[in-house]
Length: 145
Length: 142
Image 1 (cartoon, rainbow over the protein chains, first blue to last red):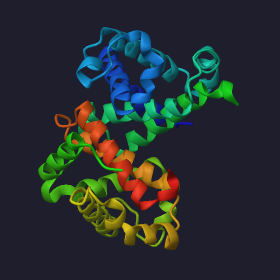
Image 2 (image 1 turned 45 degrees about the vertical axis):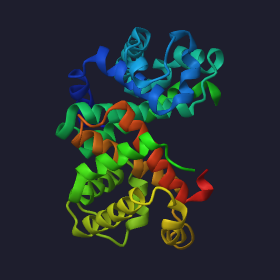
Image 3 (image 1 turned 180 degrees about the horizontal axis):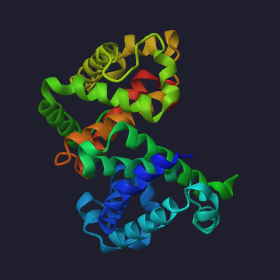
Image 4 (image 1 turned 180 degrees about the vertical axis):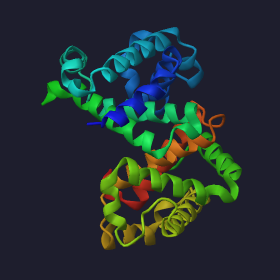
């Protein structure tokens, strides 16, 4: 999927990511920008406004969980299906999440990285991350195939 | 389909802030689309697509002008963009997926250049606006 050089570029940038902040921001933006995704988080309480979403500690905590999994995936880019097998089972068989939502979250994460890294987030680096988020989304959707 | 007042106000305010730079950012969005999604270059094989290409810049400005037209005619996008819809749908036969990729790269570009303005609510307003534009340009994309 990625050359050794591209993997290094992705890992280097991700090494600078504040995992607990970026995860919460990505999940929060998903819930605000694509409100139907809130249906999977009804137990989180008030998600009715952007302020409510971003002030919700459960969103922040779950966002961190999501990004921690993503970080683990980055260590296994050659076998994302294996890396995400049990999460795929959970999201597809138990939570019944439409796989389209994995792509949405991936793209929201790319937007968040662009916002935080500015000029460092070159078109080439974006391209590398698009390959990663697509790979992760496909791995998570694997149980549907 | 009409944008809610809050979304409309947010997009108009951002566009005022972008001013004459809309073309620069739309060109960057196009360049990002070509790099991140290489199959999108298929629609532009008649252009020089090397980095910094004047032809890509010229097309970026065309797209920027169309987006600015859309921002200023939010009440009637289908009629405002009807000629462009005809061109893109029937003459150029652009896959609507391409518009979604370009819009995603437009969001990436704006987030990269205006991090302070790119709040979650602004992000949501821009997505709604761009989805309206896509619907007006490619109605069959749903």
